[in-house]
Length: 588
Image (cartoon, rainbow, N blue to C red; front, side, top):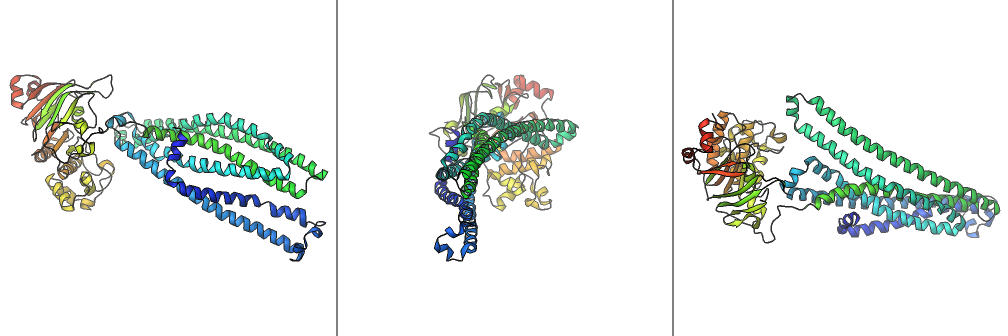
């Protein structure tokens, strides 16, 4: 399906309004074609030596002065009605374009939210943001400057051509002599404009990426004194964008110069031949003046069609980037026969699971594990062993490339993602908070929770005390990414969020690794309370915190090398025993 057909599909809900706008557009074009005629009558029929040729009915209205006044007023009335019609038409078309823009922006953002993490890992978030905020505007440009603009220009061209032929067919053909040249110019520049417009979109996206990354990492930038380097990087991106814009600007200027020159040549030729016709008596002066006005009306839509073509080429580049996102397949989609679950016992099993972020490199190899309901399983191992990756398979952030993960004996791919994730609470190493209130952050997983439930969750997470000490309590803003709170406070908010969700399965990914020993000890007491009565998978380097859990799994290079209880693994004298005995990965 072509880009234009896909864009039109977004305007189907507004087809009735579009027809109303097109009908009003026809009325406006007809009124515009009437504008030159009052002056023609004045020049040809009322100027001295023609006055007495007027019909008797005009003389009875007060002679020439009354007639001139009436014609001038007629011009004002025509202009007024044209202005009102044009205003209503433009309002309708702009409103339709904005409503379609809202729809495609919502569709792109919705689709981005539902695409798997595999897509987002490979795609820069700033580029996705640019597509939602800026590339999406192409759909409005294509409609307002494209479809409706082309309709108005074509109808104006046809109407003007018919009137001009009736006035002087020879002048009309002469005036149209430049049209083939205009078409050639349009064709010559169109592909260049699309290519350069696409490059601009990419360069502008790169500028946004650089700005967002530099500003979101401002603490790191200041800490390492890299402000000047960041500025140079941004300036380099901005310079590339500037050069791309300059190239497109030069292309537009060059094309406009060629087109305006062609139109002046056509106008000059018409003036010469038209003057000869007036001198020869085959054309009146008023008719020549009217013909000149219509020539402007003829060239205006031709020029408009030219710029519309180029605007469409530029907009097509943006629309293409939008549809690239919408066409992206969700590689972690629900199976056609997937069912929604409302509760779970919490039995999780990994059967010969292998996984790689890229096909050529596997992170996990033939993992076989089983976690019983309400059991606590800890995953330990060196950095990059695959612990967090294994954890990510449970909520289906990714699907295994081989094997299966099941819940209560049912393959996760046979469970809808929404209902599966409703059964899972997650606490990460770096709790992500949104730039809103503490209350809304705690209730993020259960927005319908009552105030009492939110406060109770905060108390269980030992967060209520510091929240109450804040100026606005639970209504206090946490700042961007929780910047107004300490690491420990953010972690407690994340734990409160998990308490409030009250899911039967709990995933903990390095929940205390960023904390100092004192804060970690306090947080672990809270986490132990959180884990009680839930099937829990915890990833950690801190062996002292998980030594007594139900099951410890040691992972090396993506494979399970040991599993069992802490004391049992120590007695075996294997990898875990060496780590535990050496004190490595412990809290002390």
